[in-house]
Image (cartoon, rainbow, N blue to C red):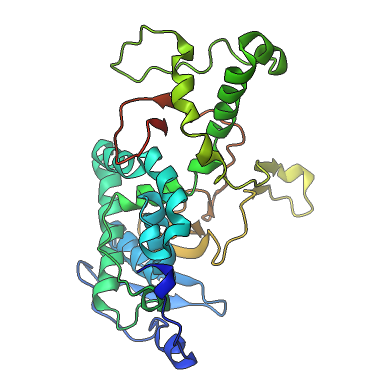
Length: 331
């Protein structure tokens, strides 16, 4: 439903009735044994399950309990479908996201995963869908836009992870250098960008033979320049560090991570605790993604990540695909 017809007759009672029921026991389809979930004074869920599959299924359930709308928002953004709810203002963002082909990329990743990882995603998706099927109260946002959540697919988790990171890489810098090269030429660009590896723009996908000059793609990249206006101008970077126990008052080592995330409401991270015979971990998850990929700890080890300036994204041109309206794509 376009934003121009959003419902505005929402009362406080409507808002309260849309809150999830976190007290009543529920029979969850697919759960192999009893799983316990309790919430502390801060509302943080603590899950204890009898097996690994049940743990991830329960995690999917509690994520959906608290953040289903956020999960659906990220999924729609990843697939270039946010304008279906938000209307014309979201169209430019959808066009940009479809160039990234995140849905096709997420599906391909799922097929390539090992059996253990696929089982984790399958169990998590089953938990999300169990909440959708059993809840009596969906997030109020669905009423506002006149919509309803679609079933969660296992590869949707990969898409959510990708959409939360695709704008945090280095492809914008590469696109900027391509524009610089087009306007100033190779010699002047090389002077302005010392230390750039030779021919950094030419990336040939596996199985493809390229015989033309590297600069042929500049005209194609020009088509994507308009999308750069949609990229948020956040201060980039992240960092982490560790201190040995010999340098701390407690004698215990310290590890810290600073992800430099933009401010979101709700936050991009979701604090939760997951325990089963195989592990017992508390940390931060991405709603829509199982596990604790960035920040967490157990009794023996803590972890955090940073990827500042890691070169893990390429720009290349190819025939139109993935529903993208133009030929420029970031991978």
